[in-house]
Image (cartoon, rainbow, N blue to C red):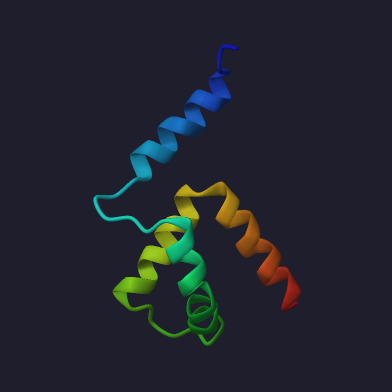
Length: 74
């Protein structure tokens, strides 16, 4: 099956957003609670938590999970 233009565009955007140091989904899950607490308290994010934000930009699965988590607090 040939990828659509939209799929290719999305893939290129994800590749462009990739940084030299990334965390994986497991590490994201280990840090997400702290990330959410800091975000809700509007505190400055430490560098290790900025990696959580970066992971959210490039991982649609974790992003979806995070959105569901956010919705549970509303």
